[in-house]
Length: 238
Image 1 (tube, rainbow, N blue to C red):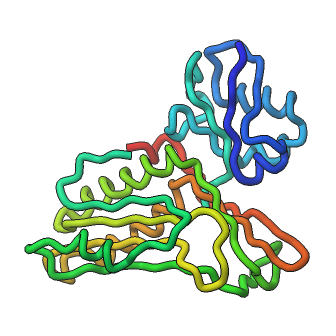
Image 2 (cartoon, rainbow, N blue to C red):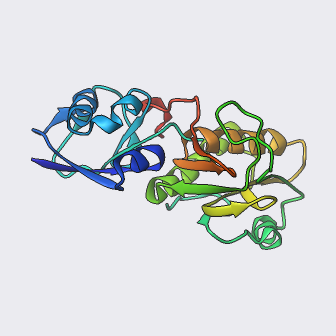
């Protein structure tokens, strides 16, 4: 059977394609899939041990079965709808977010505190393997899965901080220049002492862990995809 596999970020560049095909008997395990992809596409082999595999927009383990008709994606570690009890705002966007509009969306009659985190592009990274001076960033996302994972983060926040009354998560994609907003996370509650500071911090940290978005640092003479160190697995599905 021919299996169509979506690729993102580093793997897409190595394959020079956003999708590859693999003739493989199904069902098969994720572990077997890695071996078969490495054999068929040797240019991907060095990156496959650390790559993540998603099946039907869910993280997998090595023994997860892939069935006929499944949607499969392979991508580096990450650097939908929701039945929400309170207002939410989730967005992947090439445009800058309207922060005032998002705040107004979260402000309800029983909300007296909104805590937010805003990330932006900095010009000097000073990290090994990256350009010493950044000209711009390129962000790419597995959009359908990213939106579902934003909704999951909101559910996780409500499980930990049930007093939180509104959540916003925004991730920019495309080319972003120095000083432009890259990420925005906000949490609302009746009072500032009802967990909104911790919830907002959890939201941005979790976005960096499980939302499939990648960035490329582009400098004058080199560019490099930035990969995370956290490896999501089946435990990160909710």
